[in-house]
Image (cartoon, rainbow, N blue to C red; front, top):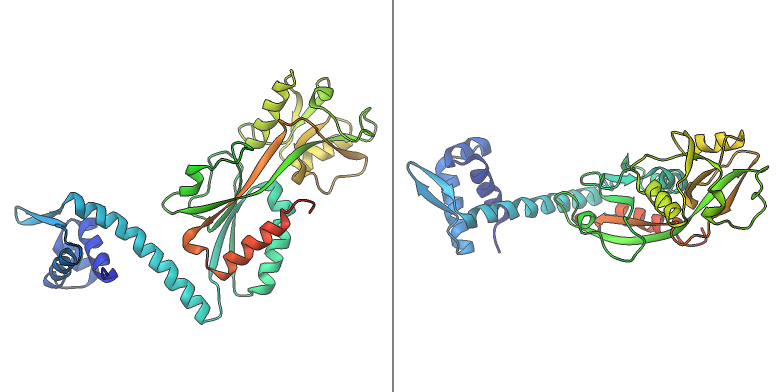
Length: 305
């Protein structure tokens, strides 16, 4: 087995481009660094560096080993952190990315349970709304996929420098929120085409995936929504509906805490659906808090909940 410490020393050599500079960074002698590099070459059976003038340069194999060494060392650091947290009764910090409707509907109960079960846990929550705006390297992330098919999103699986496991949580429909005086208010469900003549209240970012789903579904129904006003969020859109300004269409998950004089009606168009997914960093999947958070999100997103 390759010595992780030698990987760390060799990575420093490649990053600095010099045995002497790597030694200065690590606090070693140049001779000690050179010995570690020589030992790593023997362990791997590869030529990792070659002489050039008075210095050395990494070979193609050396560059590849140094790049992969960074990932190995990051995983080892994660492992050491989990072991240390478990030894001291803590679970450290977990980073969660989410979007507005999931944050409002699911995250309060998830965070409350985690705070009760892991009192020393620190949570960092980041909000995302735009397609492709996955937030760097979260430990868990909820996001809206680009389609409702069962295919996988390679970009989301890879993240930005780490590997992730992907999981489908829910495919949900859309609803329209109307004033109780609206002609359709008593209907059990509606087709989007029945809303073609209404004034609409926009409630999402113009490039947001949820809005794009609505626009695409409306186009299939043969019309383009006539937006009267741009509301900053779902709750504000509901307030405008309450005062008779228009109707607003949104995913079912976002239609909570409706104000008086409004009613929610399911939309029956098959095109008005969105797919919610969870991605979990593989290096963190054994962390007790991450395991528990994942289970809580599955329970919160279960059909009928």
